[in-house]
Amino acid sequence: MSELHAMYPGTFDPVTLGHCDVLTRALRLVGRITVAVSAGGRRTLFETETRIELVRAAVAELDGRERVAVVSFEGLLVDAMRRHGTNVAIRGLRTPGDMEHEQNMAAMNRSLSEDFEVLVMFARPELTMVSGTLVRDVARCRGPVERYVPAEAAAALRARFATDG
Image (cartoon, rainbow, N blue to C red):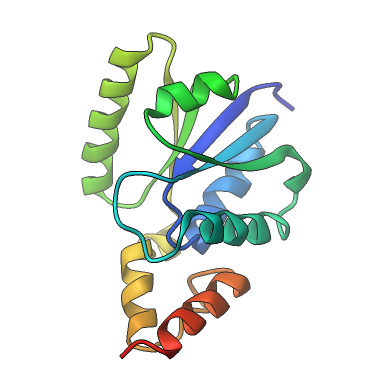
């Protein structure tokens, strides 16, 4: 097993089975992973602490969970990576649009930190349609989200939209 320590950043709003798949596969390649839940930036359905707890619940079900830490971060990714002692970011790609976005983000982060690297994990074909945005839309319409998110995230989504019209 590699001694490499990587960071898996994202909003995880909510954590999906696609996120869990990328994390599981990345754990085969690196020794430790810090999942970094973004506390800043875009507007989210769930508060940061709720997203952290949902990610922790999902991680608790994974093989290799003892090698995963879950934290929050604000500000620049490269700064969070320095604070946690890593220079490798794990990113999952679902679509060609993701590729363009991630390529631009990697270039910007590389310009901010010379030793910044990205480990890209392509989504499994059966998970390419799973995005936080689409899962939130299905949940908002009270559709079955259990096939797209871990059990605790599904329960949180049902609870969140039980009172919303």
